[in-house]
Length: 247
Image (cartoon, rainbow, N blue to C red; front, side, top):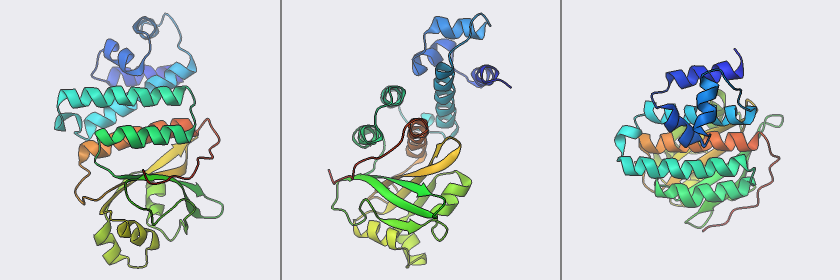
């Protein structure tokens, strides 16, 4: 199946109209309509953008997030997500994108900390590279741990997000130094996402909240949508983000 055929398949499976899809992905309606009718071919970059947008929309609906919020909130989040997609398309630096996520996504997801870590599969290590937080840091950029002895290994292997009640996890795993440091910062919940770049889990994205019940289905879906965009960004750009500091 060619990339164009795959895009047509996903459009056919999507409940929205071509006009809604073209608006959401910021692709001219005439271009998308002619492509759907077999009259023209889209550039690979446009196809990648459309497939990414459709994946995010389907994931959002399937998790029940859309039904759990008002139409205004959904529209505002979609507009914000389109801005993030624009940063990715313009190949802004990773640090700019992460800062945009920290400052903007907080309007839709109740977190107080965002962290980003890279994975070195050869040395079996996960290293914290960037963070922003409303609280003084205990787990700072540069902190490193062995992947194979961490619960994060399952996030990497399954390529699925992980939601933790940090206090409960620490009671079961008292030797988890990273968890202890985050708990000492005052956080009670953690969402961890694998960031897939070039079909490899190369990074991890973390969201933390002081409320152990902060992350509902809508929050999980929105953070997943953001993670896909970071995967797009990091697949085309070498990364060397600066160290984060508490906001």
